[in-house]
Image 1: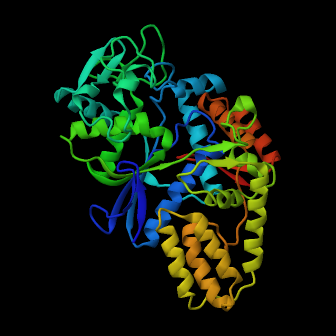
Image 2: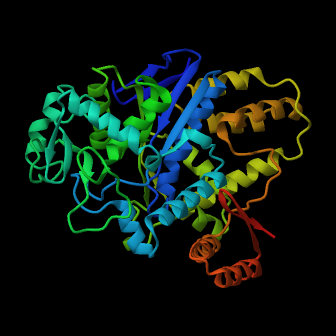
Image 3: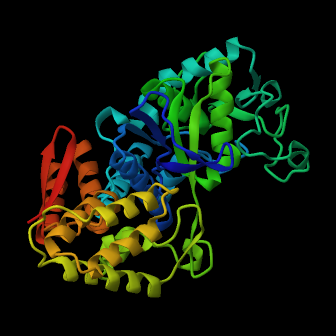
Length: 459
């Protein structure tokens, strides 16, 4: 029996899908305006573990994830710059190229950590679903939940009585300014933008026609529109970081359930806690901002980082140190070395498999699962039996214990050169493009141009 903590009820519950054995799961994906760091990636490993455990229990999963490539403002109060526009200015690239650059960096990090991402139309880009987002805002407008200000269309949270059911915040405290700054035209401190109008006199690279004027969607509306399109109005699991609880996911529930006349949006809400570095928040200004590529550049196996993540429960804050990563690397190497000469797998160790299943089914208790794994390795069972059971464990752990593998993650400087070459190709400067290709080849990588874009491989 699989049990998981549900933020909506603040309790660990037995997981019962709406339409067993099928499970619909939506993951809040990255905003692709800058590098995804190891704090972000801890959450995606957590989602990957959840998915693996669901499949381990025999459920059939339909997993979708969004890529936020528009509309995520730097302030939760619906003010400030769009993060995509900010990233474009920072790196001197177009918004569209920034989105491609950092989506690729995210995918490379996932590949290194053995995270299985949704593919095809299940990896949904916000800019591909603008009509669906506009249609959802229109539906909310027709039902009387919206109002217009000088800068956009807003959701009136006072018309949705259950607005705080996920966050359990005190609205009186919010009125004191504890949550967000108050901006001109908003009726309630918790109201949020559904559609933002392009500022007058300013040029935006991403904007669309709408019934309310030229503009762009608010951050929250994309997740509701895309999740309901892919999974229906009522689905099983919605995941994200704990920073999404008070605003982003609270707003998703309000706009979704208002549009569907109170049909429950997601049955389970699963949230992952933060990663800090040496007891401090990760920040470039503190020089403690690290990516998966940084781990690789320093000689660490990225699956040692995955192993490290598994040692801390997903609902607990995790403190990253280089010492802890070195310890995880040593443990991971020992795991590989201790098992590499085991006999071919035969009938497994039922006792250990039952204990492992009980651990992972207890709100994803992965540290206990790792302890059971080491007990198995040190046990007196024949290596052929242990091999069979450990291979079963690795369906959940994702540590590629018995895999023949090479770490082939394309370095970021090569990816930057590839993006630069694409810029030359787009403007027809093929001489500069060829020179850049030669430069990339001299560094040991080749490029194949395809309809989907350039494919980079190590020579």
